[in-house]
Length: 88
Image (cartoon, rainbow, N blue to C red; front, side, top):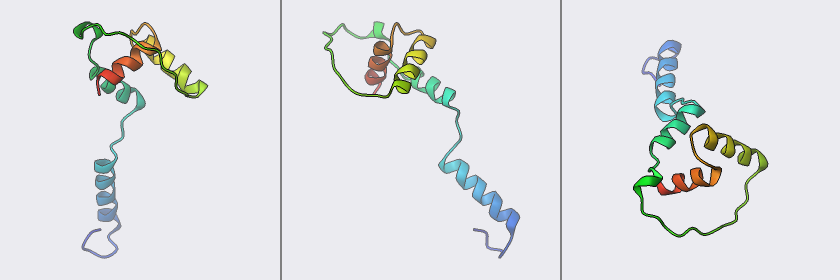
C-alpha cells in the first residue's frame, strides 16, 4: 500500500494500522464489561408484567450465560438476559 515499490516495512506498518482500525482487539472479558455498563438497572424502570417465552440455545451457551450472570451479580440468567434486552 505504500508508494515505494517493495518497501516491506512500510507495507507492514500500513497493514497493521489498517487492521487495528478495522478490527481492534478486545478481550472477551472487556466486551462483557462494556455490555454490562450499558445495562439499565432494574430499579430504575417501572414494574411490568412478565411473560414466559421459549427459545433454543446450546448447552455450552446456557452454562456460559449462567456463569456470567452469577459472576456479575444477577439473580439468574433470565434477569441478565432481560437487562441486555432493556439496554437495546
